[in-house]
Image (cartoon, rainbow, N blue to C red; front, side, top):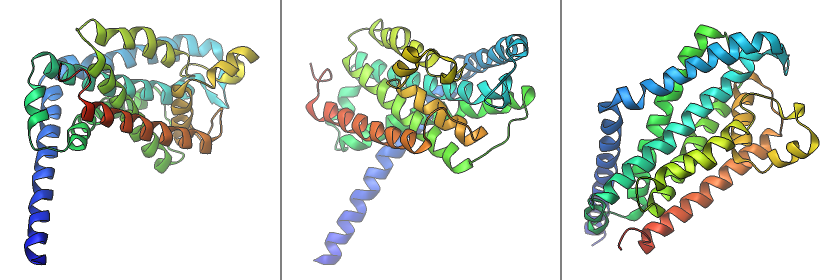
Length: 267
């Protein structure tokens, strides 16, 4: 009896893994198949940021946080590329399946909801990491940035890409048309990124703006990632890591709840 039960659990775990693997492979193949649209544009954008802000403007700004301005903005630009692409991959993929009604086939399949969520999130993380890796290679052309703490760097980039993959999923669930999936990136995500310390140190801001920055989650992501690469941060690294972990758990729980209730999916 125990042997039979053990075999049943093993087979069930195998099926779950196959389902997860299938979703991930589909998501990765999706953005690799159209790499000219998904990988090339962000790389060109990052290169332009390096040229314009790093070389042209950075030479006039001088040093910031003990580093040249080029070295200072490299972590922020890499993190910006990661979160933008992790978000874009999930919101576009999930909403497309929702719009085409193909997501209903996945929801009625004998696949746990957490596996579906993990599959889409992993696809977003994969795209974010791909673009981040390419951006890191490009940064070496413009700056000789070293790695201060590789463990923190990896943890932060993974947590950041997971958080914004979940954000893309939530946006896709609530979106009713293709215009809705562009509202959040335009009016929420972009301002948060530019006000998140990518191009400046929070110490250069007036007291009021500095206080407002404390409520921006991207501020903590950028500074934690900058700490992992350069060893400097405008905020405690322990606080940043704690907030990122908490945000990941809260957003994953909320996203899973949306799948269980079928809100916006089974109408």
